[in-house]
Amino acid sequence: MADFFPNSLPTLTDWVALQTRKRPDYAAALGLTPQDVQERAAADAAVLKATTDAADALNTSAALVSARDEAIRSYSAQARADIARAKTAPGYTEAIGKDCEWLSSAGALDPATLQPTLAISDSAEGLVLKWSKNGQDGVNVYRRPAGTAVWGRVLAFDSRSPYIDTETGLSGSYEYYVQLMKDDRPVGQASDIVAAMHGGR
Image 1 (cartoon, rainbow, N blue to C red):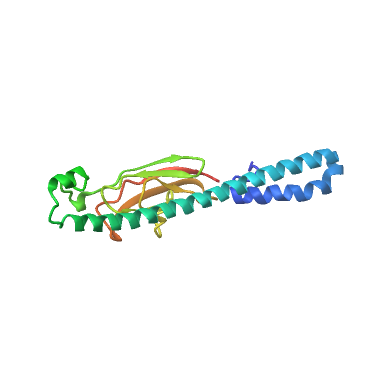
Image 2: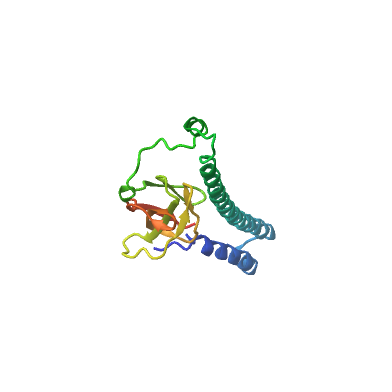
């Protein structure tokens, strides 16, 4: 038998608000005292405030992450230009480059064989996707309901791991993969597909 209690967040908030409106109408029939009605209304208000506060926090967090990524992109472009210019200076030496960590210590990589790792865990904010950057600009994130064949459009581009899927109203099993990106072009192979459960936030 289906449970009457909503399991998705948008439906839950509508349902709680309905209880606040309807409870006084049926208080006498249900044997509720004015104090009962008042206490239940306070509980309704508390859970609605908690959901609103959480939504506001998630929006703020998403905005801060976006601002962080933009700041890093801008800084990285300027730093690369500054260092490239510095390396042409008459007094520049490899010793300076090593001391300032301007030289890559990694061997050459074949872009065609690059493949990011992907791991997913749950959190209060949403599903946390941790991925490896492999020296590229970032990744495109893809998501689909488990069992479906089409991935659809890119869910997001992210330049710093982890990416947190904060979308509400999703419930059940979903699949994800990430694709490395460099200069807005895909690089190497996509990550393995990883399944995770959304809990109906």
